[in-house]
Length: 392
Image (cartoon, rainbow, N blue to C red; front, side, top):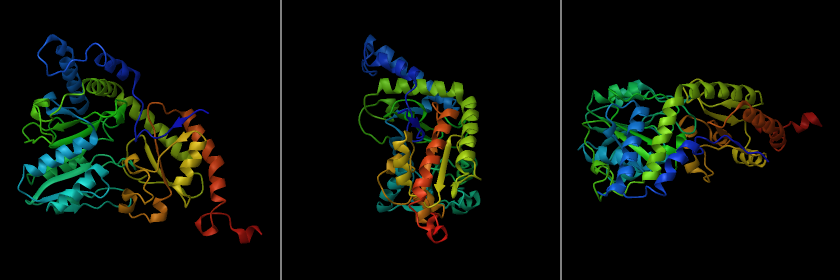
């Protein structure tokens, strides 16, 4: 059976060029980049080139403002911990729809005596800048917000927020793990202080990411040890992974605008064809979103049952964040947006990527045509199933 992949927000395949760029560092160029002998020259060159490629993708003037990490979770933790340690202020602003790597860290910081203030979103997942402005004060150390939500694809106005935040001398961290490679970013002259990214979200390897730190912003390393990455991230560099990240960043820079347009059109076709089904609607349809992401509510159908049925037809999709899979609880994102638990448990995310095509969309639609009547036949009338009394 042919497989059809609609879970690119969870991860994507490595591009062939990325694998090719990584391979020499598993074989002939295996030396430690921190060594002084000649064998370390090629690994050091790979680090420089990757740093330059990531800086270019982010629109950063100073490539040394980028350093490498193990991925988005470490980047988020490193930025937030550094920000709060550099300030005497004890208040942090964030939103209830952030990734678990941010929200669980906030829970830990709350136990350490920090006051965590949640900025609410509306039913379309939008952040109100007026609400943000009203919460800014001289006792706030940090604002941490995602640029794009991993479940809904909804975009936060982070550039506009950055200007408001800096008026109060507050540090600003942006979790851009879902938007890097899917949205044009220009950090040159931006007041954003920290920005996190992860390679595997744009066809690089898993286990490697980066953190941008605005020049002049104090930074305290999360990991104690050696002086790698200019003292900002101790530990022997994952040269092969970093080379892969650099190549993925280079490819993303080359194809960003055309891929945004292609995926936007393909998502439009997907949503138009799927929402003709009874009770299906798109979450955040009126909000600015990533071009590749569509979270749909299937009118009372259990998302887990639908996902299993889709998988049996060769369709890979998700109920939301892969980091939270296995938890039979309503999505914290949809709950924060005001959806009832039963609605939230009917949500399925389709995220598109490099391998997505009109043929893939057609395969998904054919599978849904087959599956949805079967699942709805199992529902009581009040949940959208057949009315037994009328059919008798």
